[in-house]
Amino acid sequence: MFDNVTLKVYNLPKKDTLSGKLKGLYRSDTNTYKGMMGNMGVYKNNDCLRICGSLPKYLNDENVTPLNRDGVKLAIEKLENDFCLGLKNAVVCSVEFGVSIITKGKPFEYLQLFGNTKVLTRVEYSKWTGLETVTYTSKTGSFEFTGYDKAKEMIDNERNIPPLFSNSNVLRLEYRIRKRKGIKAKFARDLLACDLFCENVYKAFQGLFLEAYMGIDKTGRLVYSNKSKKVTPADLREFQAEQYRQSYPKEYQYHLQKLKEAGQLAPRSLERIRTADRKYDRNVYISDQNPLLRDLDAYIFDVMRSVDTSQNLR
Image 1 (cartoon, rainbow, N blue to C red):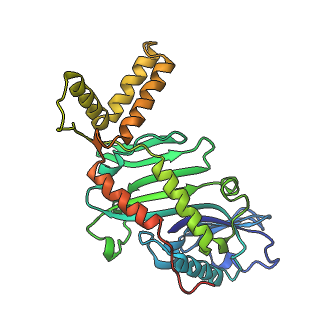
Image 2 (image 1 turned 45 degrees about the vertical axis):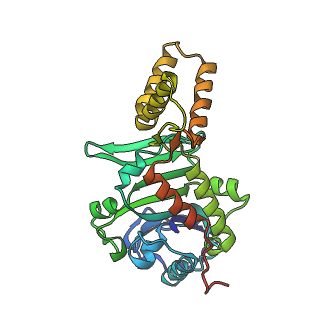
Image 3 (image 1 turned 180 degrees about the vertical axis):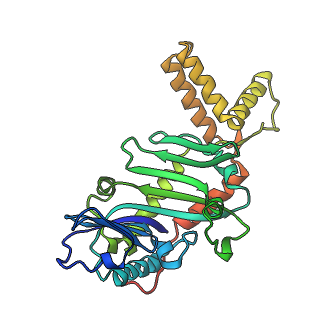
């Protein structure tokens, strides 16, 4: 499930045999250049060699089908053979861990139900044609969680779609650590390229992905009343208000913001509202999870809690 990575290689051989193999080679000086090896960007300076790109695309010429640990190992070995350079001890400076999901509905139908989180900032990318991408970013920029329409991205970039995913709705979800210090913060050490096909590291990324996904408030719940008892006018207003919050989360948030900015909603009152909202989200007697998200959750839990039983790794 690892996709885009950035690897840094230090202690390079004195004799440079790589530059002659690169396409689009551009030199800044004798020791500094950049170019491409397949889809992998290559950047060299006096200190190190940096390699950036998608491992599954480099191995299989497409990055829709996720790589298991065996696949990651094969991709690293292919890079080593093509570069004539040992890479297993290369330092991982950024990494993506994601999954491509064939969904019943269109990807935007799921993404529009992804609300805010307590620790990450939500950024929505849309055009006049509608919502395309939702990204959650930490303050430092070290961590991200993003969701987008993978099939649309492949079509827009004129890339081949594997038969398994052709003519399908494909939702892509990715957990990203974008900086080396972010990796150190999560693992208390650097990760090396060989760690990417280690079972413990793989399982750790499963947990980080699931933690980020579960931290997103989901909207679009179906609100209903308990038919075993009589409904009062107050109950009806409560149900209607909650259905409005679930159906129109943006308008609800804007309304709260307007009241707060106008000084009509004290911080203490706002916190009480937030607490009540979280209580409603957990109350199965008032609302039921959106059917689309119920199916998505089931798939995510199944994939992220499974163990990659790659047989060829030692």
